[in-house]
Amino acid sequence: AFGDFTGPFGYVYRKADFVQPWFDEQDGRMVYPAFHVMAGLSKLSGATLLSVGTSGADSIAAIAAEKDGRTTLWLSNLTA
Image 1 (cartoon, rainbow, N blue to C red):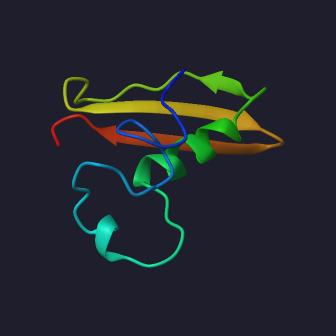
Image 2 (image 1 turned 60 degrees about the vertical axis):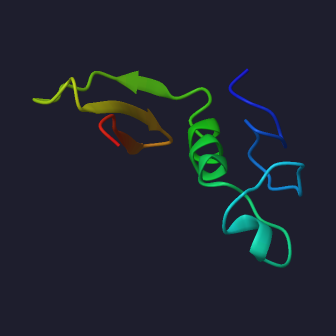
């Protein structure tokens, strides 16, 4: 598994016994940025993975897939 719904490695904000800057100050329901990544990647279930090459393999990770006639490319900055 990649994480949990809530908690230190979760995708959905929930008040905790540790400080969560910005999130603790907001009202309403919230999700962490990783939620959007997992939601997007889960839409690629059953897709055909495509080969991707980058000139900066030590600083950029890439995933490409084709599904329903559409190509999706995800890039990740490994230096941040």
